[in-house]
Image (cartoon, rainbow, N blue to C red; front, top):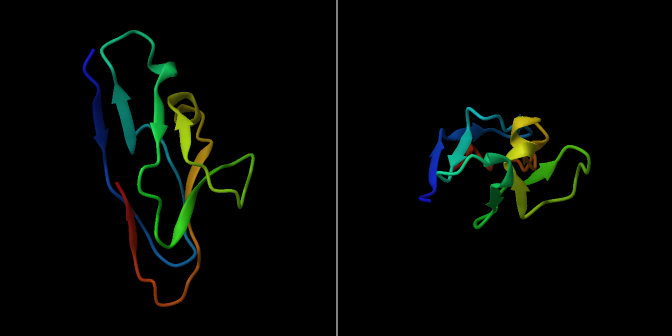
Length: 89
């Protein structure tokens, strides 16, 4: 089926960490198996990274809908001074 992605922007400032929840990225693909959805990080954050909470400090390039539901994925700002705010979309 068609894939529908609804996402609210997440804005981080220097040193912030935001755990992604189903309020931020939520996708459906028209099937009854949302747990099979895979997100790919096509444009990583400039001042930080996307991490799995079980592997802090290690950037990931993909994660599953189940990881979001379990609140196991975070957007982490790299604490670079003068970087200002960064948004995840």
